[in-house]
Length: 280
Image 1 (spheres, rainbow, N blue to C red):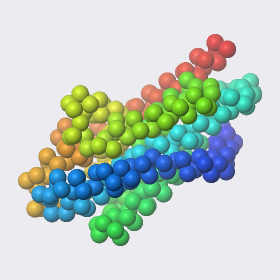
Image 2: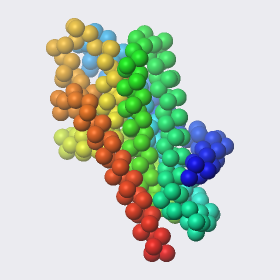
Image 3: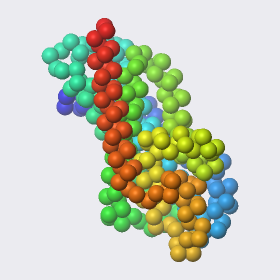
């Protein structure tokens, strides 16, 4: 299994297009923010003491969340390519158990996404401190941010791995990912503030597992940007921007949702692979 993980990492970072593609989701988010949302969001939050800083940190939290999902798309496609080239079949008829083979693909996807997301977190912090004139996160905040990002990446990897288990051709999967990528941005409230969505859409967003991770990332990044003068409007704005969901500031519940969802998607993916192999 370790050899498969190493192989996945090596092949991914050798493919420059795949590496660049992992940052596409974050780039789309930044372009959308700069050209479409920046001024309107800042103006709508004029009651705050530092509306630009709040919007910047909200946007960058979304970029981190999107990166954790979009970076898995390029790495998980290795399994589809192996299926198309019959390399996957060679692995499956080897003495290694099918579960270990699939976990090798999964953990290579997870590690690649974690590395990409870590780079985005560092860039986001540099942006907040240097350009937005915000404050650097404390060590405990960094620790919590890393834990939440790790769980979000794990959930994203398991979700994409489950989706990829249904495909055998890279062109079909590529078409699907071009839809899934932007869709996740909307389902996690990264492209548009959750409060501006219709009520039905808000309900869907709230129950989408990856939203829990993005909400926690937003909460950590924006923890230092609200001041005492903002308190009268703070709760409403946090609900509107998706920093708090359903008025709950609890951390354990979203973390539990991420862990349980990850395990569920991973188990379903392994089950689906075994089911397909048995049919063949």
